[in-house]
Image (cartoon, rainbow, N blue to C red; front, side):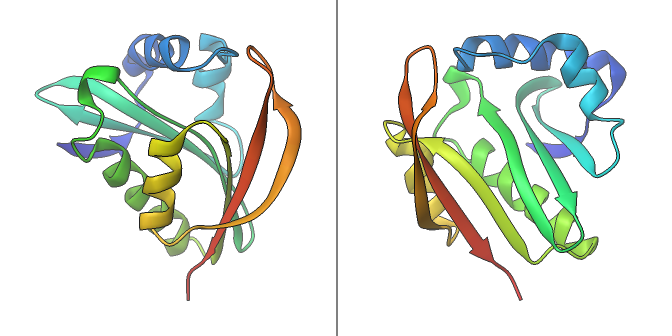
Length: 145
């Protein structure tokens, strides 16, 4: 498995993953545009020529927010999410990021476990943050020196 930047021909596959993984999916145009917005980067995980996951970060100075990360159902628990997250952190670190933030549905115990494994800690909660269905968001952060 490899992780690389988003290419224009990847947008359809990324959108399919987005639609399958989130009740409030971003539109394909928004995903495509994210790769060109200042401070944002989009990464894809590729296995045997197939996009199996993606992630989007937004960086401002030394802070980086993980906006999206998703892996196809059939490829979960095989390291794709961990590899994506590690590569996103590394890329942002190389551009000066030292503090990383994200939010996650409180029911997403698999993702929370991954984030904790990668040294993210719970830093707060946003009640009723998510819709479709309504759910709280756990805020997590990590400092890298």
